[in-house]
Image 1 (tube, rainbow, N blue to C red):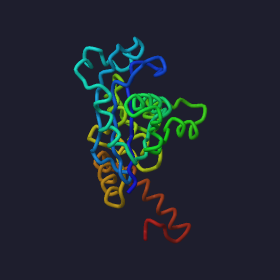
Image 2: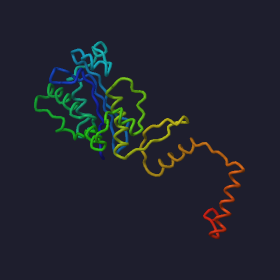
Image 3: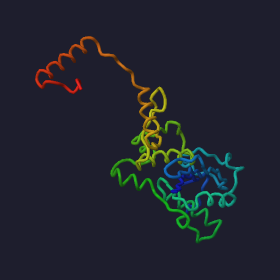
Image 4: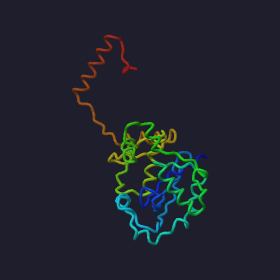
Amino acid sequence: MARQIVLDTETTGLQWAEGNRVIEIGGVEIIDRKLTGNHFHQYINPERDSEEKALEVHGITTEFLADKPLFHQVADSFLAFVKGAELIIHNAPFDVGFLDHEMQRVFGEGFSLAEHCAVTDTLAMAKARHPGQRNGLDALCKRYGVDNSHRDLHGALLDAEILADVYLVMTGGQTSLLSNAQGEVGASALNGDEDLRRVDSALAAQLRVVPAETEELLAHEAYLAALRKKAGHSLWDA
């Protein structure tokens, strides 16, 4: 049973070494390439303000975080959720660096998330597959047909959910499905013949049948007659 956690964080700024802190953690669980619905989501009081540029990205204010738990109050539950799993993270060095710094404040300087989890960096993976192209999460959503239209600001859980779809498509486990009568495209796992039949049904439901006109039918019959004269039969006669 392969257990993976697609993980994202939001922070007060870009550098933990400059005193910036984690303010949100979001993770979604995948087992055997299927989203289980199990997730971890926690806002955290960083005991400081976010930098202006960071606030523009995530929109999580100091006032909103004022009554949220401190990191040491959620450290055990976070570690229990991710321990033993493979972490799937976009630009993993950033998130892991922040999380290691936070966990070291709780468990001591020797703590390393990599000792408890395998880590896969989807940004490095995307750069290897698409060298010289934009490989941010929004760019990958566009490239792989993953709907992120509901993403106005960054949020750890929302970004983790989007990244999960991108990762499964990028690694060959999903394909785009028509999700409703308007033909909106979403990413959904295919699991054998039953799901393939559902795809065929979904696609067929979107197709408009246009009957051939009389002139077209006559032209087609004339074409078949010419084939019969030349070859003695046609595939359409089988």
